[in-house]
Length: 345
Image 1: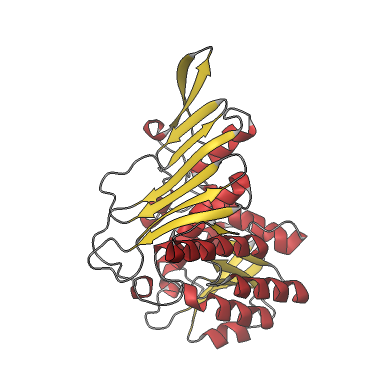
Image 2: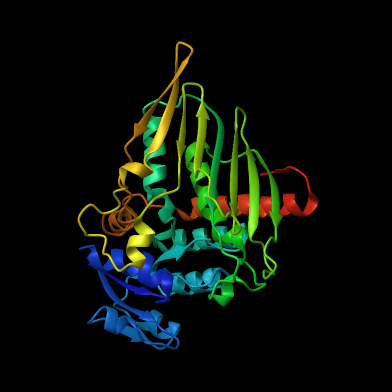
């Protein structure tokens, strides 16, 4: 079993990591660094609350460290864990700069350690279903893709690090990595980007809205996210030469996890029929449509792949090189928004 410790047992640890680690037979959740409140021992009897990060790294029984702390700490904490001989899963955004990401990738490779970036939204029901349609040829050659992650929140997050002027803070580095990752999975690295990044809420001092247009030789992918979408539109609008797929962003896993459900529950990740997407096709000049049942979402696939990577030297769920590419796109987007021009990548 892979003995695993978390860097934090806040929402990320409680919702997105501990449930999947604790229910995966290849992992043993040893504990978490907890700075003030000590909650992991009550939530998971037999685990340990560490008083410092140094104590986590000094524990020779720990094989894997999950760096799920604020973005501006990812580089330092990941580097320290690698130097201590630990495998690492690091939350998105991987790092603040691509240079930091490249350094961590090189360090992990030099020490023969596994370093993966936690991109759970690869395993949303919506995106899994879209990928299947593309692979089956239902969409044809992509012409235009629009992916959005819309929220409505006029107040600040209780997580102060997300609303402070610090490196890696803001919506671009919070939800941007999810959207860019999906775009790259669909079409590879873009040639260039044009971005609009803004502050839209009166209470905000950091970016809380962005639109990015990613340029490809034959098509464009537009990524949008913001905090003032009172009425959400489709999360996915994908137009191809053979068909178009329209779907709301309706993966149920996060809500289920927050409600305390475990990923080994019956029908995990299964969407309700009313949330299924619709595929439109042109049949000899007549537009027809059919509802496409969603593939069940499953964030647990990330840790299944991580276990195979550590125990069997299988492929990582998300490589550090992939994580670095995402940061390159985000850096180019910031450059584009500041200079109001298209920026090559």
